[in-house]
Length: 119
Image (cartoon, rainbow, N blue to C red):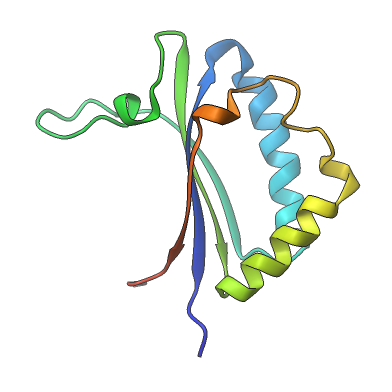
């Protein structure tokens, strides 16, 4: 049986662009789910100062005028992720959505993960 799969993202968004980022994320999330994603989440920093632990702000390379966004998309399997992402990337509704400079994609961290524990 295939196991669930998650794509994860960590990025910094300039505070002045956060409203626009949320608009783009809402649109993108609807499209990902329409193509079969099980879950789509975009989370904005709230409590990142824990003494003795690595900071998400540091890991994301956030500057003073930026907020950290942690997001993920959940799929039924990696094969489904590959199918859905191909469909999303070909969807004309997303053409150029990230090219308008809302955030610096070169500073975004991304990875695909097999779900090891789900309670």
